[in-house]
Length: 179
Image (tube, rainbow, N blue to C red; front, top):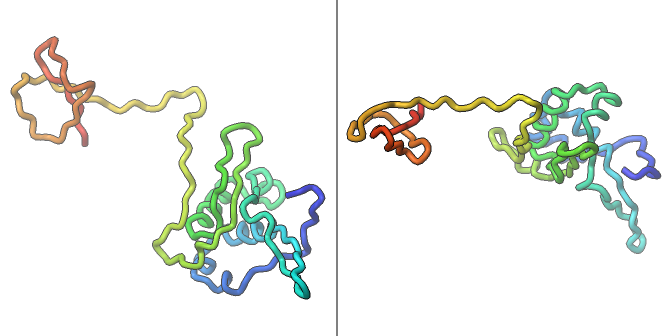
């Protein structure tokens, strides 16, 4: 939001939205988060002849951080995450830019209209899972079972060859069992 922009005294929710299945299915703090997202909208008045139309300026550039949720609204990190996930699943918001990679890299959200066709059991969107390992702890290694059997032995189990499958120095095969 621009520094010179003053937030309006209230927010507008369309009847189509609050009568929808997706809106009625919101639980926990997801409804509160949706109203906060809707209040972050910035409209600009454009005059077209005799009429003035309102144009949404920042539909794809809404920023809402964990710190803001905690300090301004008293919403903890777990509740905030669950609420955002619910808004993504039901199609009210989408993630335009996934933040968190660097300091001050904030997630940027956009308003979406996928909620209009949402039905129970349909997931409109989801958060991408973090692939970066954090901290000093190494990830757990998969257990590998080594079976020492002659080359011509048949094993009746689903197997996956490990390291190319051959260890011919001892005349035995090395497999890892998939369970």
